[in-house]
Length: 128
Image (cartoon, rainbow, N blue to C red):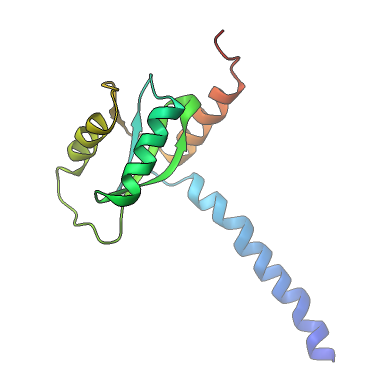
C-alpha cells in the first residue's frame, strides 16, 4: 500500500514532465532534412484539400502541418520514401501539378516561425 502511494506521485510527475516538454522541443526545431515548408500567397481551402487528398495515395510526401490562412504547409517524407537531393524541387513540381496555383515556393521557416506566422494570420481580419 505504501509503495503504491509513493509511486503514484512520481509517475504523475514523470508523465507531466514528458507531456509538457514535448511541445517545447517541437517549437524550436528547424526544418529537418526530410521536411519542407512551402508557402503560397494564393493557397485556399480548396487547393489544400486537393493536395491533402492526393498525397494520401501517391508520392513520397505527406502533410505534417498546415496553416491555410498563412498560406503555409509543412511536408515530410513518408517512411517508405528514398532521400535524394532534388526532393524539394520534386515537391514544388508536384504541387503545381495538383493545383492551379503557380506561386508555391520553399521557405526556410522553423516550426516556431511557422506557428508564429500562423497565429498572426488568424488574428488578422478577413478581407471582405
